[in-house]
Image (cartoon, rainbow, N blue to C red):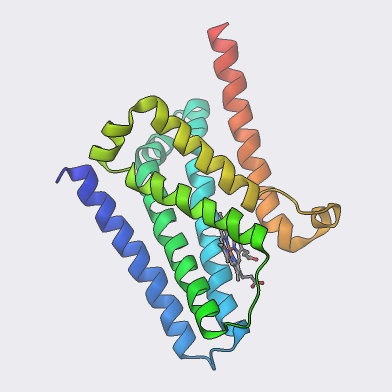
Length: 197
Ligand code: HEM
């Protein structure tokens, strides 16, 4: 096993055990009502979002700032992505537990399909973060897959569902960091365009 693959496994298992363990400790310390299950479900989504933003800005920040910390962030980007997949796995585990213990719960089919597709993309991204599958896929398809996954996640994390969302703090806690990340990416893109022309 290569060093990259070993690090991937270490980070995936550490992030899974940490978020899964904390969620479990929280759950057993509560009456495990629906609200209690939704607390770690929301927190895992929030943590995954923070990791997602880091992945999104790693390269543009390095292009814009060229500091030691931005170079380190870019070098760590793959492992941040792996940690993201682990945290989203805990999110999935909590969702499965919630539906398993409350079979009467209903969830809109469209959201289930959209979220399910996101998970399919995240796990393909995770698998192709390992050396062998990455090589087998080839650089063009790898880039396409990872871009598609990032855009799909953006639709869930960053897109307002209605105009009212634009003044709702529950949306803005995702919307504002997402907008800042997009502006950083845009600034880096502008600079590379100016340089190449
Ligand atoms: C079919 C798959 C999914 C289901 C059934 C699901 C279900 C849930 C549930 C039950 C909550 C808690 C909601 C509440 O407390 O009212 C939640 C929160 C959340 N989930 Fe998921 N989820 C899915 C997939 C995803 C994916 C793929 C993402 C991101 C790419 C995501 C991002 C979020 C976010 C951003 C929150 C809100 C966190 C907050 O309000 O602070 N979910 N999800």
